[in-house]
View 1: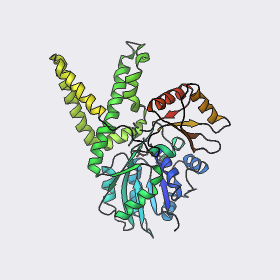
View 2: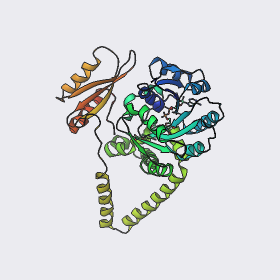
View 3: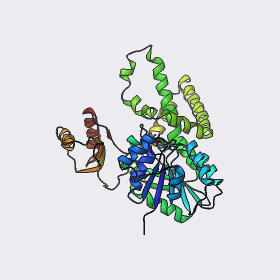
View 4: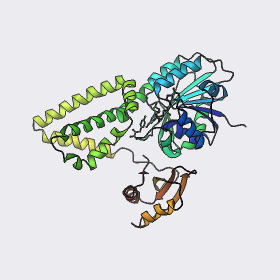
Length: 365
Ligand SMILES: NC(=O)C1=CN([C@@H]2O[C@H](COP(=O)(O)OP(=O)(O)OC[C@H]3O[C@@H](n4cnc5c(N)ncnc54)[C@H](O)[C@@H]3O)[C@@H](O)[C@H]2O)C=CC1
Ligand SMILES: O=C(O)C(=O)Cc1ccc(O)cc1
């Protein structure tokens, strides 16, 4: 059987990272409005071929995956709906909010089109094709939203095409999707940004304060370093959920304020204890293909001695690596090493040590 053709539109962080995985199952045609991104994707084997235009790519494709921002995906859905298609075409997207996309998908009238909404729940504070990484979605949840027009076979085909991502597919409906991601992803982003603003407002009074802003402050505000345009879009696209959560938060902060004003020490302690218990009960990171190993992913340059330098840095602190895998390395660009450790404590130490030595090291969660 010949492998299917997938058109990936929008070769940024998410579209590019998915393309790298799709190429193992399909012939991948790429399209991006930015010619430099398209050229980069072609030269660095992110895609197999570049489309001449969006329309030409669609005519070739069995499946179209949109890695574009949601408003752009919506525009393209309207264009594709008006095209005369000679074969059934399955469409999917990666948008962080599902209701706006599913509403448009519901209105599609072209009999050749089927749509499955998708949302890979992993990312990075970087964007663009140069930040794309094949291992980005390993062990991450990949949420799928279907409608009545989508068949069981469509879903099976999509999961098969995306199987090399090693992500965990879960089907949800669009409202549950937008509520859940609002609570655990979108709203926390807003709070992280507001904490940064609060600290910044005190900066002039206490110029030394930012030196103290390590540890907890850095942990809780990490996500505030992500792409502002994308997060502005997400907050507006999920506006009703965010407004409701914001009101709940304001009410809750009012309650906490009341506890402090009324000297309700045991009530406040109970509040903190309940939060700790719930937080500690959250699922810990699940291991993937290597169940008892703890992985660190480290970016390396493609040059002689790059791997031995990484291992000698680790050896200097007697951190023993139980497995090394080269995930991606192509001439002239950075590659990624997966270093596996037996113990979580070694994983954490290795990440810090590599960062101290100027490497970019990540732990998937
Ligand atoms: N960045 C993240 O952490 C995550 C993002 N998402 C979703 O993925 C989508 C894309 O996000 P990223 O990959 O981070 O953004 P990105 O900025 O890295 O990539 C977007 C790509 O779309 C291209 N593009 C824009 N307009 C276009 C057009 N008219 N025609 C063709 N290509 C066009 C851009 O040139 C760029 O290459 C967003 O909808 C976002 O909600 C989902 C999960 C995680
Ligand atoms: O890792 C993080 O903290 C993220 O925030 C990544 C992320 C960003 C956007 C999404 O829609 C899903 C995941």
